[in-house]
Amino acid sequence: MSLVQVLFYLMSFIALASAVFVAATKNLVRSVFMFFITLFALAGLYVLALADFVAITQIVIYVGGILVLILFAFMLSGKETLNAIAQQRRQFISLSKLPAILLAALFLIVLINVILKTNADHLGWISQSIHQKNVIEPDAATTENIGVNLMTGYLLPFEAVSILLMIALVGAAHLSRKEEQQ
Amino acid sequence: MLNFYITYFFIAIGLFGFSAMFALFGVYAERKVSAFIQDRLGPTETGKYGTLQTFADILKMLQKELIIPTAADKVLFIMAPAIIFIAVYMGFAALPWAPGLVPSKLNLGLYYIFAIISIETLGILMAGWGSNNKYSILGAMRSAAQIISYEIPAGFAIISVVMIAQTLNMQDIAMQQGVLSVEKIKFAGFWDVTHIGGIFSWNVFRAPHLLIAFVIYFIASLAESNRAPFDIPEAESELVAGFHTEYTGLRFALVFLAEYSMMFLVSMVAVILFLGAWNTPLPNIGAIQLANWTTGAGWGILWIILKTLTLIGIQMWIRWTLPRMRVDKLMALCWKVLTPLAFACMLASGIWRLFLM
Image 1 (cartoon, rainbow over the protein chains, first blue to last red):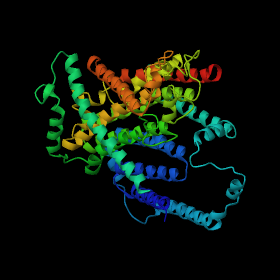
Image 2: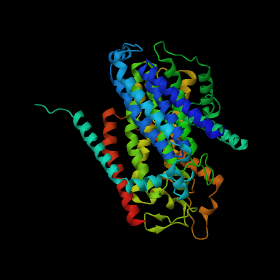
Image 3: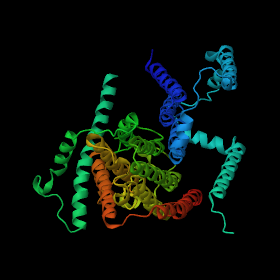
Image 4: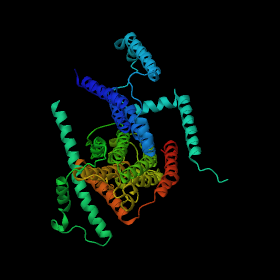
């Protein structure tokens, strides 16, 4: 096994193990901190896939933003709420879990189907891109590529997302504003 | 192949040693500077002029008992200082020290540093929650709120430089600010200083709005390293010591080490982005080629350390002369003054790039 393969399996193992811990633990705050390790391992996998820009963006947005906000929500909510969530009935098999199990099972079937059907070593579009020399070298600057693509081929989705975020911002500002004195 | 990895290990250990030595020196300097500003003497007893004081302090700290409060979340409590320090320490990997001398040649170096610093917030929240102490958690929340708010003006100030420099590679940004530049540099957009170099080719003088961006970045970097006047996370008068109230011995030392390393890191990033990185401040004057004579690996390290220490000196000076800001004023300054200004700088950078370069 080459070093890259060793690193891939190591990081996949960390990502999966920490994700299982996140889902299984009773301690909610610890599970949030464990989620941080999952995200970090995912960032490592992105680096192995030569998507370094995506990896760093993952850390900026998820670790620096979303995780910190989740923690804020935890710390602002009272101990009673947290205890109530932690002391839910923990039965392994119960009717309330049926939809979740169904969804997970169906998704697993889809995933296995995809893995079995695709011939990952001989994908048509990949060999075509290699043939046309439409590939990114390991030492290439991906930032420019992403920027140019965002501003040309993907301009409409990019603008739509920015409008969505703007709406969210306006909504948040409106909700947090003090009511006028009547 | 093996040599390659051994070099990396040595560089990593060297950077750790450097940050530890800098923390020792920084604490001593801070005490002497504060003493000078407040008309005191500072440490005088241990060693000549008290120079051995911080070594004595760290020896004492290493022997202290590591106390874990009964009600604390032990795992989080123990891991938090390590995460806080590692987040800052990993940032050093992408900083260039001299021409051709950089631990890791990342073409996304600046973005990487920006990302890795934000992990410190998580460590601070971990420490606050893990201590299970109201002062700790209040301090941690204040600190996190402050850091994520001030990341925005800092980020936009950085973007306005990147738009002018057109690269995220720290070494390339450094290269553009002196006589080694391969492209044309203009002082304030009109005077070609490509072969003159020196202080005139630094990024702060490349466009007038970059001077404002530098000030915004410097203020935001004070807040990000929790330094006065933005040190409300550890406001002694109301919160005992903030998020590190419960820490003792080596763990407290680690938190302290992280704070001083952070000061060095943010100052060095400011130097690289705005103040010419490892380039000399001396310009070429006709036949007296001062800039060419004072550019090189050894000179580079000297210049970058001198400039960074100057900025750290200013940080200390500010800490001991300005009073602490109130929480709401702090947030108002960030969101109502610095963020719009930083946006304006970014806009100015775009216009500058399109029409004046």
